[in-house]
Amino acid sequence: MIKELMSSPTGNFFLLAGPCVIEGEAMALDIAEKALTITQRLGIPYVFKGSYRKANRSRLDSFTGIGDEKALKILRKVHDTFHIPVVTDIHTPGEAAMAAEYVDVLQIPAFLCRQTDLLVAAAKTGKMVNVKKGQFLSPEAMQYAVQKVRDAGNDDVAITERGTTFGYQDLIVDYRGIPVMRQYAPVIVDITHSLQQPNQSKGVTGGRPELIETIARAAIATGADGIFLETHQNPAVAKSDGANMLRLDLLEGLLERLTQLRMAINKINENIK
Image (tube, rainbow, N blue to C red; front, side, top):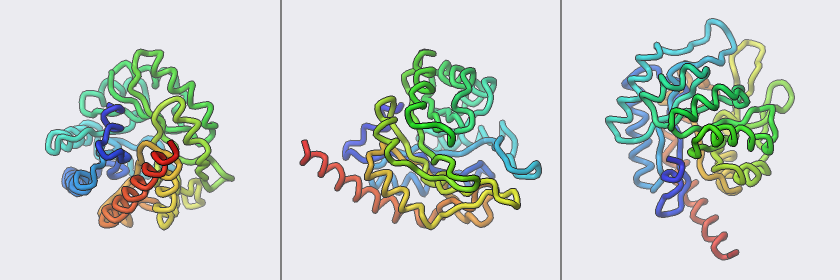
């Protein structure tokens, strides 16, 4: 699938976008429909993103999901309704086969990117595997995560940059890592999670959504193959990661400007050749 996502006739980037977690059917279908309308017009290959369950939570009382099967069925309905691929996170080897029955791309969370059994289980489903770079790893270290997937018989793999731990409560994106990791696999930049401010004293992750476009422009300028972002109709009431999400009505303008930037970068690269 990664080859299909990278085969835009216009040379545009591809997009993984949707809510942090599936909160219900209506919200998921609404986000998917609006994002698809925008991406089709702009020639952006689109994958709908939604977690069926959130395992990495700051507090025990944090929202984790509406139920695995219910959320996975909603993801499948998005796929069937709009004929687009969908991606979700998995957390244990046993979840790989279960989730693969409903989705097209299995995503490995950053904190779990070194878990060999998880990577191998995801690879053996035959689905595309998107491995998020651990906040604690160098770009060079991601070659080994990619190789585990390939050694398990699956070449359909991508790496997602999502920031590196910078002190106790912040992340920073080192854009030098994009060309490094592109030696191993196509690279996606997770715009919104790169702007998280984890480990806040109240147990709720903070964020810097006003910098979404800054991070996204830099990702495109430095050669990212795709971008990942979370979006919601009203991030203020989102049940997970609302502090760093993009408001849905801002998505179209952002993607228009990023597309213009991508076309300019492509032209520059052609002139260099």
